Picture 1 (cartoon, rainbow, N blue to C red):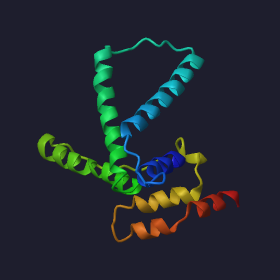
Picture 2: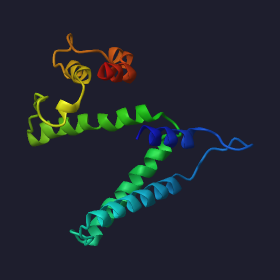
Picture 3: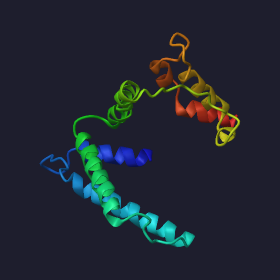
Picture 4: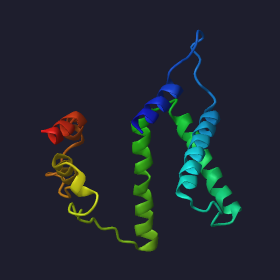
Length: 164
């Protein structure tokens, strides 16, 4: 996944050739992405011997597919202007107004939950990673770990702790 993200960003942000042109055909990248995904999915379905018959009417798949293609094309286009991490933050930030709207209009109540580190997949995850998650999800702001502190923790140090 990380390699795919790095490739997407490199393709869209690094100039190519003698004229230092930028890649402008985002829809072609989406097409390549979807062809690859379809081929892998078909292989998995054929291997699992599951039926390939559609469950819903085809026109319903088309609506979702067009929406997906448009959003992915926009994702590639945005990479020309901002980095992938910033783009990801913006995607996750869209939940905030949706939750606010749900609270105001639908009287929904959102509550935080406790993570059960005893259930799957948590037993297979190293303790230092679980500790980091606990620190990030601390509800009291003064006790919560800062983003600078999180960025200071390297993945390599977490992996080294597993090896020891």
